[in-house]
Image (tube, rainbow, N blue to C red; front, side, top):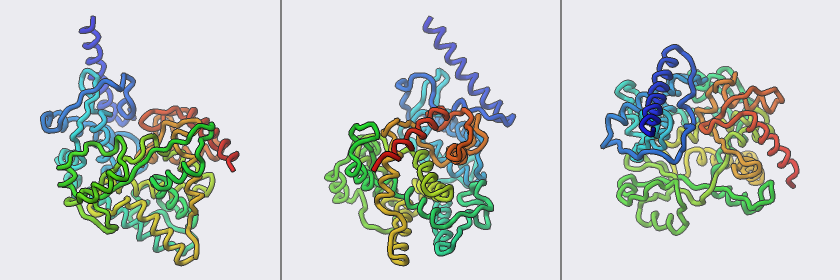
Length: 426
């Protein structure tokens, strides 16, 4: 009997893969492998890219092609450079096409950004790891130069001569009011700051339900690649690193503290978790900023979220991430030129308080940059614009959001409750 069940599961998985391939060839959008598997998530296989090289190569190629078949309002060059990062996350966690014929997820724990690029550059030569990193640096630099060129103007174009910022199609030909756009950028640049999250816990102490407020978090550090590999810390995004741990790693030279530009491949970036627990929902944060500062503020936050995504794999980078550095630069400019920061500490903490996942009601959704520009099955616009429509009071269709395939009606009902609760906070 067990053998029959296993054969049926293998047949179902194989048929699903064939069905998805056929749909992609015919231009039909199939989201079967774009979210959490319905099967138990505690069953998986840990595999190696070295010992299972052919399997890894095949999974990477099919997963990338599958993601390309989904519907995005993003130019092809930018989409390819973003999806490389998505494939890496799916390889590490056994998501998407990283599944065997028995329906068991495959976790390639030694997968890296460079290894994914090495596979893909055989089909797409421009996706070699150094060119992708350079491309991402250029896009962040282009945004930075663009906003400082218009920083004293009333309005800022959301496009350049090559199209919408970061290749986003719904930004083509659009402009935003400069101040709310920049406010949204700064708020999004600080909402992941571990220091501000600690301040938020200290200020509010309790969540909307009266329980102790809990917000997890960490920091991006620049690391010496050779020493970081030699010390073998494992996944630094799990567990907790104390202040003493971080100081020790600085003394060893593993973490580089000086605030300057560092260059790959001698150096790289790594996220260190400093407090266990869930962080902030980017979806809730975008919607809060939109309600408080208008759609132009939301677009600023969205632009900074793109910086945060591109920042993960660069040729040149700074401690704390380029999004934090850009937010600092904007704050300093307004202090020097206008006599006051663009955004106050209270505004930053209220955003974090509203958007933390474990506030009430809890929210298990935080869309990535590629999810915000993706048109989900059942939606009529990219997720970011669907969120804007909800805030405008429009009737929302039922569709699934994010990796966890959160029901849209449940999410928007929970969001409405959050807005009701925050309005009662002093």
